[in-house]
Every structure is written in C-alpha cells, then in structure tokens.
Image 1: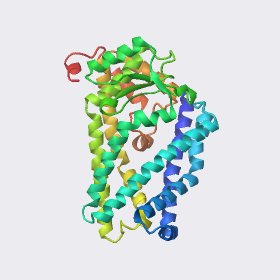
Image 2: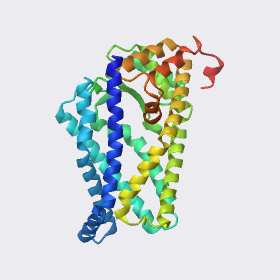
Image 3: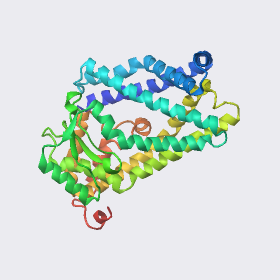
Length: 370
C-alpha cells in the first residue's frame, strides 16, 4: 500500500509541475507571439464598449486555456484516479463535472476581470487597493454561498441518519463553542472511494459535511469526532480569520506590484497585457508558496493538538490518520522538497508522531484554553 501511495504521489507532483510550467509557457507565447494584440484588435472591432471588450478578451483567454489544458485535467482527475482505483466515476459523469466546474470558473473569472479593469479605468491612482479589497470581499461571499449553491451542483447531500453520531457532533460543536446549522452527509461514493469531512460556510450557513465513504462503518465514532474536532479547532483558534488576513495581505502586495509595474510602462489598462498580469500573479504565488504552506502546516499542527486535547483520545487520532491515509492513498513521508512546495498539511507520519508524543490523556488547563 505504501508503494502505491508513493507512486500515486510522485505522479501528482510531476503533473503539478508540468501544469505550472505549461501554463507559464502558454502565457509567454500569448504575450511574445503577438496573439494578444491580434485578439485585442478583434475585440475592438466587435464592440465599441470597453466592458464588452474586457468580457470578450477574458472569455477568449479562459476558453483557450481550458482547451489547451484539457488533456492534463483529464489525466489528473480522471485517468490517474481510475488507474489507482480511487475513482468510481464514468467518463460522462466526469465530463459533466468538468463542464460545470469550468462554467463556474468562467463566470468568476469574468466578474473579477471586469471589476479589475473597472477600477483601473475610473480610479487611476487607487485602483490597486480598491481591486484588492473587492477580490477579498468577493472571496468571502463565495465562501458564504459555497455550501448552499456550489456543492449541490456536484453532490447530493442530506442530514445524516445516524442520530447518535449527529448528537455527538452537535455536542462537540457546543463544547468547542462553535455554532453550526446541522450535520449533513454527501454522496461521495458515487464518484470516489476517498473519505473526507469538512466544516464549511460563514455565519448562519456554517455546517458539517461528512462523506458517505466516511460513514460506511470503517471509521469509529471517536475517529469521526476527532476529524471534526480538528476542523472546529481551526475556527476556535481563529485560523480562518488569520488565513483570510494573510490572503488579503498577499493580494494587496501583488496588486501594489501591478501598480508599480503600471507606472514603469506595463499599462494595466491595456487588456492585451492581461496575460502578463496573470504570469506575474502565478510567479508571485510560486515564490511565496513555501512560506504560505509553512504557515498552514503550523496551523494544522495546532489544530491537531487542540483536537486531541478536546476529545482526549490520541489513539483515536492515530487510528483515524492511518485509515484516512490508506483510504485516500496519501504518502505518509514525502520528500522534503515535495513537503515544502506541495503540502499545506503536515505529512501523515508527522501528524501521527505528534499524537504519539502527547500525554496519554491531555486535559485540564490546556483543554480550557479552547
């Protein structure tokens, strides 16, 4: 099993690198070949209105990119998953999900681009921070509507039928002072054998989602509670707010870089330069990725500690991690470079080792800190 997990992980690392390099290459070709200028001219001939020109140019980039990277998406999320016996989807089901996901991405991309260029046209000296604030607020709105509007497009979900588990999770949420709407089950098993759980939404939309692959009997109730205690700990430790603040700062920095480059001659108002902006945005993300991953891994370790302290059963945490690792085919101990660039969670072996080194029955003062 460990050998299969390593092979699966290696292919995923390679695909991530190929996808990144290929995307950067496509953006370079777009800007250096003159295709961007030709495309801009076509948009200008089609309509005199700037808002429609932005929409047409953005749509052409999005659709073109989708066509040129379809083969990578197909292999990564369908063929590879089938090869390692992780997927239960038929190609028609995968294609429907792919189309729906791209349609959602298309509309989000168009909205972001329209607002980006709107601020540039109307606020020549303050567009960078206005655009950044809009992107941040837009992200928060998406987080709010995600469990209500987006998840049902891909999965059916209902309130879990196991009332004992439901009451245990609600009690755990109350213990950790987390308000949730309810506990739901989603039909993951129609598409994959992987198991997962999530605490999603903002405000009154906050809810717990458990995959039916997690509820099939393999995981004991304590183990499921441990997963949710980890998710609730993120909320209690204000990790979500910290991550939003960190993302907001990151967006402000990159948009300020855009503003400085605009003053140096890379005109932000020229839609023909959109590919260049995306290229710079990607490079910034690549450079900052190791640090962002390190921050996230630190938060994940703190959430693991809090979950073990709250539930008071480190053996349940260890067995849960072992089962999830086996079911999801996770590499327990990845190479250092892979960990630095690809892991925003500590590797499985590190999380298990953390639990083993904790007191047998962590409680008392540390538990009250939550």
